[in-house]
Image (cartoon, rainbow, N blue to C red; front, side, top):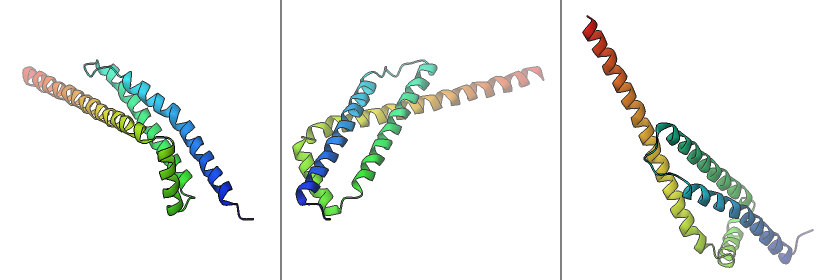
Length: 141
């Protein structure tokens, strides 16, 4: 039995509502996490905690992106484009994309900065250790 056009549309809207319901808590979580991040002048231990939190956010974002991509695979390209355009207009997604994109870029920049700082701290510690070892060997001989 072939479903009617009305049934297909109602199923599409139900799917869209489900995705929107899943997106709202995630967006709130990302916003809460991104506004709760401290400044970059932190101790080394705190920086690793922030890096862990940023990694979790990146994993959540990748997981959500995969889920969204998997759900939309069963729609044809033309049908998917039509549904996306209707959903985009219906739920005013243009208002959400700008701030979310900015938040994601900010989170990515923070992650890169903190990761770079952590790498530099490890290199500095290694350099000090090498200098101390070589100076103690030089002094004792």
